Picture: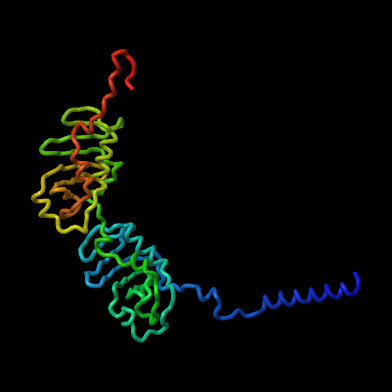
Length: 319
């Protein structure tokens, strides 16, 4: 290599060495794009550690939920079974709750954000960690976000509106709306009473059998559809008190199901085009989906096993 080429190579090597040293030892700027875009968490919630949750909605009674073992129950304003999926949905949203931005680090007046009288407050109690209170205020002027704060923390945050939707739950949102709690696959007997006449079904190793009014094989799919319709019956909590409608409604049927955890009954009546049900599992009368009533209106012949088509006169199988 000639001296000129050697000199160029030395210069290039020196330049590369300088760039490498600078990149490894320079101090990064304090306000980088990464830090600016990093959304700080508002709360530190570890879902398995939560033992109690209270939700206060403006203008309504607070809802308190407590965890016993692995199961959540509503304790206030009255004891009710809780919808486990709904409660877990709220806790999941809390555990992943981040802010879009910090509006103020030290807010002297929270009234302008709607945090002096929050639209919703959530008190979260965790095992060994005490209680935290999340405050949800007004929507931001531009929309899409909601002002939020934490009791004892002077900062004001914004969170996405969908987070408020997933957290701001009412008593009806959190109640278990099941009218029958039996596992349909574990139901072994069904008594269907229609206008004083009873159809009795029994599940054997060979499938469903009709015991009454006379013993005969049952259409297994038809009986399974009946069982699933009854066990999937849900109370419509958006409807008004259904006691009067049930009282002067026309009786449709009473279904008594026996499973591995006991026997439960659903009585259904019809008023005009609507169906109302009363369950042995919970107090009260509730409007239900029409499919529940329609399933109980089916007749004996709908549950009987269909006979194969008769062969033709020529002895050939019917097509």
